Length: 204
Image (cartoon, rainbow, N blue to C red; front, side, top):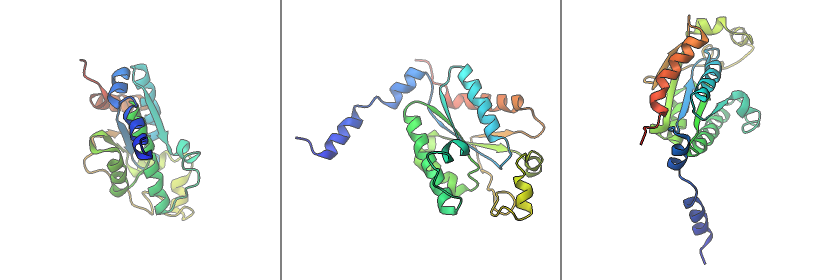
């Protein structure tokens, strides 16, 4: 009789492989990690990208603060430890999607190299596609429909990224998307075309 550890191993050993699922979906599963200031356009571009990828035969899952903090990370606050745990859980879930052959589109401020490296280490260097949504702070403040920047500047919101807390721009992102002065369509199409080489499975 096998012990419990052997049984667990045999079950996971028999699960269909990532490669099998990628072949079925005809795509390379990756984690697209979008970082940028609040108001930079991450979620807007992610939604545009999700639709464009779907139209072109790619299977994806979009994750952002709204859908993870309403369920998976509902009990977490905004302390440094909770923010790190938020990213850790997101990275672990993204990794599960990836091993299911799915392209995960993640849009989170994730303001420091440290927290992005935490996600990168969990997901794996070759599968972590870091995307910098490069939008100047002044432009983000102009788009501030929720009034968050104004509240941060008045002191109502503490430790707000870009105002009272630092944002460390990626030094060498896999993809950089500029949004200032561009329509959603122009920036989204630029993003899509830059991403395609990362997720296209070579024909056998």
